[in-house]
Amino acid sequence: MSSAAESKGTALVTGAAQGIGRAIALQLAEDGFDVALNDIASKGPQLDAVKEEVIKVGRHAAVFPADISIDAEVKNMVAGAVKAFGGLDVMVANAGICKARGSLLDIEFADWDNTFNINVRGTLLCYQHAARQMILQGHGGRIIGACSGAGKQGMAMLPDYSSSKFAVRGLTQAAALEFGKHGITVNTYAPGGVITPMTEQFAPLAGLTQEAFFAAQAQQVATGRNPTTQDIARLVSFLASKESGFITGQSISADGGRYFD
Image (cartoon, rainbow, N blue to C red; front, side, top):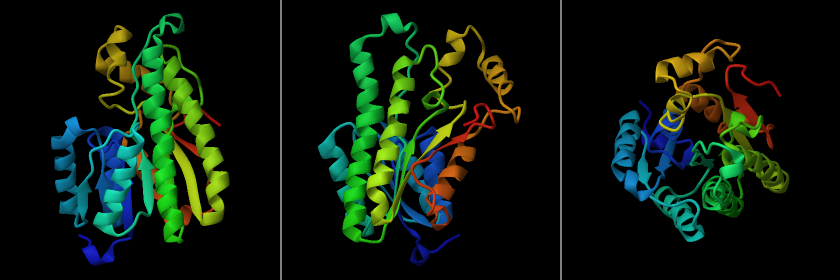
């Protein structure tokens, strides 16, 4: 167990109540970071549970509920983390939404706008407020966003989600070019078919059981298995490290070889 005095700095993880976000938060705690945990307010009990898990690892943790699509809430979230921990070294803009929509011809504009508000504007706001703080601190930092295999290969039934993740890639490249002179790297991770509450929605749409659906997904992967939340967390661990300092503007796949760049 690490002692608090050995902290590597502060990492803020959005969408940390469950799934990939929870795994990332716990991995960064294991790595030696104190962790600011974010999700929407309705997931408060789950956030509190993750907080207790981080504390058991031996790191400090605090909870900052916020809707990442609202500028004032993201600003307050970052300010709260800085006040609690004294600075911000890693921002993981993990929060996002995904819902199968059926035909592109039938998508409702409200659904399209909601996906972009969370996945693109929310990521932008996290990048902006994290970068402002890191520039103010003057010693660089790591900004890490959530892309997807759907952000590299468009997917049927996911027109808004795929489009939003392509947008995150472009945003990340632009941010990397602008913030590099400040010692800030900006990258994304692009998971494959990780089994989470978000991806479990697709099995019934395909007329399959969860087991059959994910077995079929694994057959499309070079390694023959679906990635786990821990696989993604290990990639984020590297991107958050000092050793990743010459990597920026990239969207790195962690999908077991489903897609090749």
